[in-house]
Length: 64
Image 1 (cartoon, rainbow, N blue to C red):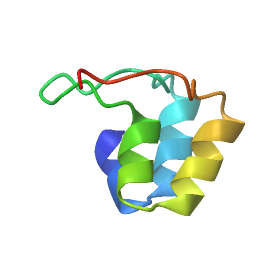
Image 2: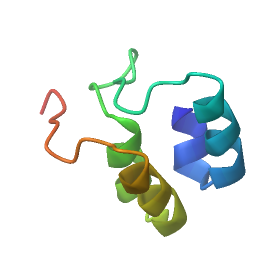
Image 3: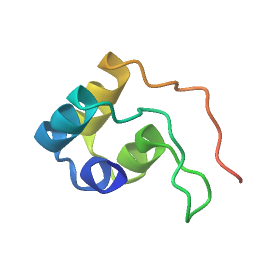
Image 4: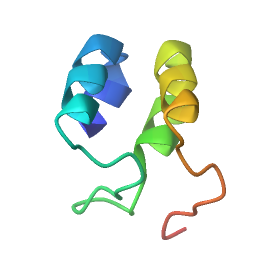
């Protein structure tokens, strides 16, 4: 799901979400970035829009 947010693969995120993927889960091998953080970092506007519409928590923080 994080990779899909990183590359802007909204269709993939939609399918994963329909099959129960979490929206606000932090990436376990990094600094704890959520999908929304990853999408924002790489200017993936369509991903950001999808995540916000899906209820992503924009108040979450990473380790830094």
